[in-house]
Image 1 (cartoon, rainbow, N blue to C red):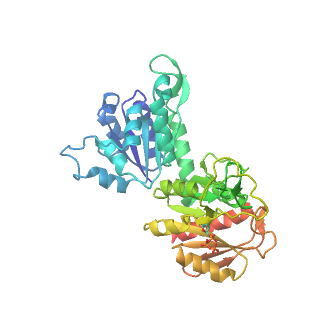
Image 2 (cartoon, rainbow, N blue to C red):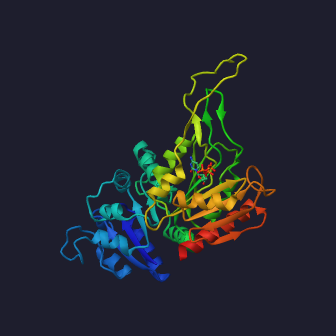
Image 3 (cartoon, protein in one colour):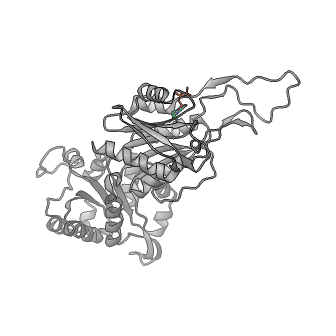
Length: 397
Ligand code: CTP
């Protein structure tokens, strides 16, 4: 594996040298990229000797192999770790600033696992802007390896000590060694949507979210970072690699997906999204309308899956679900084509134990090349394994 280690100006920079050594010892290639402040704490000679490669630090230095080193390096590296990460580099990352070698490379480095190991004084760590910036990075799927508590360089005791190099090495390698899903970013939708009629009523459906949560858990266990965009459900997501985003309506789910899809390798849309919503939402509780009944006019919701199908770029994989009651194969294949999918998971409501609310499911997986795999009735956890296996296989090919 090719590891880029970004080093910024904090006393913990000496720990970065140890991290370089650990990766090299384990047989990985390492490229160090340091800010000028980092080099006040650790010398180029130390980093170059330990990594066995020329340090990249000056955006304009004549020794650079190429004038656009930040671009060639982002292609070279498989993963990147910023260690230690000062409040300054975290702020630059969150705001898209590239004013030196490291920050420019970070702007270019996308679609691959990126770890940030903050190290700073406790008050800085608790600063509103720093917390907000870290939350922003997390929402983009960047892995934050939280600092620990202990004695800090300033003499104070508190949170802000950079995690030990051995621990960082363990976290990163464990994430990455879990097969082809290691470090990948996955978008999943789950559950129902609620479409408001008035302040106390909505149009919903019986989806429990169990299939989507089982998928999120399976991906996370295989090392992926999962964005789980879920409609209202009583379920809880357990794995620390799952980032849950709660939404209520189809339009909120749409916005949450659009925000995250570009950074993901795979999207699996298992939510039961309402196709229509009331045109007007009544402010307050609607009163009874008399004996002649009442009408609520519905308007169409955006189709999240079809929109992502159009937006999908080379290398991204899009998987949809189809819940059918008749002409199952024909309808599912039609959706696969129409919505620009790579794969579709078909549930037939004619199968007992399959579909909404149950703990079991029975699915047929159909890919774009027409390959069809019919599964048996299994727990949703086992069905999730089958689906993720099929996705892994497709990604490999
Ligand atoms: N879906 C979506 N956004 C919508 C509706 C559906 O993302 N507004 C996704 C679901 O999550 C699922 C797939 O599309 O992955 C299947 O949706 P479905 O409602 O069965 O497809 P439709 O095209 O609406 O066809 P139908 O006429 O059967 O309702």
